Length: 573
Image (cartoon, rainbow, N blue to C red; front, side, top):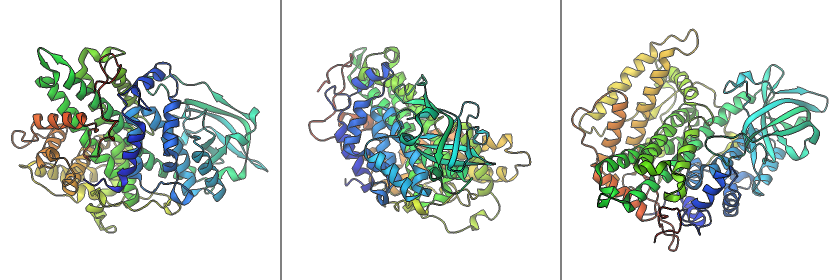
């Protein structure tokens, strides 16, 4: 199979990072776990990724980089997270800091960020504060106008790359409004800012999570990003991109956990047979696999939509950010249950890496907004989508362009992005889809869609978001997920491995989503037989591939997969 263009760089990065189960690989699980135990950054792994050229994919082509396609960047972050989510979070924070600069920064601001990223340096996005939490309007950090520029006062905390970042994008109150400011930390007066201590965390222990305190810190007028007082609008627009890319980190952690569990089940013998032969183990692996593949459908389509339907992305990115971490956490939990008692040991399969994936994946649901924040955003967007005559607002997106992985998404043009704060007009993913019917399953989803629209239209929005809107938003997320699975299968089934090219895989995904909606399938489940799915998973992992809808080639010869032994030592070839 020819690898789609957006995924060729991921194949190359996989080969460079090597087989993480092999202690002799450039980025092995053994050394990553050792760093995590000491709560240290995996600096050697960051350096390997930099030498490969990951920083170039954080910078648009117009600024000397290679960032054109968010589908490609999603996949690259997923590759990094398969080794250690800390690697992906570190680079993701730099990207978030740079996004407003690429969209609205001056030529000098863009050149500064491009130069720092090219040198392998990092950026930070300083938004959150202890007292404000996710309420950006409660921001207390101030940027007071002076004759020379602005004076910054306040503390930003829980910031990734806060200490090592050499540039920083800061949200601060400037007069009655909020503004964004790009700081070159090397040019700041050293006695007017300080780094706060590293924050200890349950997961992502090696992440540079700390803060910055400003005390009458003078910055030039050229530090302001975009128009005066437009900081909140710029930040909310950039957040749509970050929400989607955070899904790549969740997918990578789930990939790693599932592969560890599948390999353990293949190699571990119990009761005179391989663990993989036991029905309860196969049930767990099958459920984990279906959740992962379902999450992938949602995440990849959301990434493609960032350049195909940016005006819809405020809704679609929030749906992805709500569903994908949730599904990936379930994948990791089921993988952990396959290890059973071994999961509670800080050694064992892959040096204890599955335990790290479990800790790290629990954080993904709160990065850039908790699940409740996402449901609030979704409910607000649905109010517009469900309005009468909403479908008359502009042309539909072509589902083929949105979902076909062999059809390249249009390149990102950051200077033409614009602020995406208008009401969401259309939702082709849930409102423009059809069968296959799959023994009456589609009819259940279609009835759910019609009823959901009526219930949203009946809501009263007089005093903010109604309580019932959150439950309706969650049901919409499940409906969106079912539709994304259908669209992905229809437009890519020729790319899929034979076991996934049949509609039975889609039926199995739909049955799980129908159960969450409280709607049973119209007849006994006729999805993909559990044995076929688990056999596919075992085969993919034994070939050195990662469990994914897209059948990417394994690492080159010499980097073929070999599971680490039970003590986390030399790989078994």
